Image (cartoon, rainbow, N blue to C red):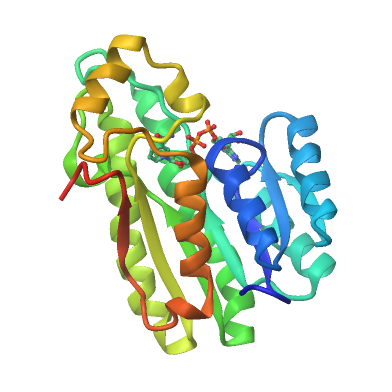
Length: 246
Ligand code: NAD
């Protein structure tokens, strides 16, 4: 499905990003594993990809830092030759009720989750324009559609990502660059494992399919959007949420 394609996945050392990196590799892609935290975890993902017979490289970069991201893009192209798929997955939460939320908490989340997508998209677009092809997949969230108390910063960022997806899709369509988003619901990762048992139970009452999602549920849809099977799809946001937000 993705043989010969070269991908960059941000925040790929764990959780959903790791699952996406492995899924793209299983389908034939070489993968650059971006990370900001644990180098050992990024190295482990690189090893798993190499065991699948693909090329992999780990690259440390803060997605919100333009200098880091430009250097990362350059490295991917010099290692692999092309950059065909970008998955903007890196994200953080700093939850707090609006009246308690500090400006720094708002800024930090917007910088990573929204500005990071802008910076990474801009950095790869030059290369994809040269190639006259590319697939960009942004990891948004269903809360960017529905809203969520205690997450004004995160919801604003994810709603912004959905808007950015539509605009970049329109701007880049003539260059054969497809831009789509996925909006996961509650996916079992370090991010959701931090929630209490009671919060988990509350979540299940809201999910028609009656289970939390797995990172692989998201990865499979990203793999589809990265493939030629999705060649007539752009500017869309696909909900992966067990039917939570319809
Ligand atoms: P996670 O915390 O396990 O992984 C996030 C990754 O992003 C980590 O590897 C982290 O190091 C990396 N990261 C954070 N800031 C970074 C930066 N500045 N530069 C580069 N990398 C950075 O979380 P996850 O649940 O796997 O989330 C992945 C994405 O999915 C995020 O965008 C998140 O908002 C989104 N999402 C998650 C859920 C969920 O239920 N888990 C639901 C909806 C959307």
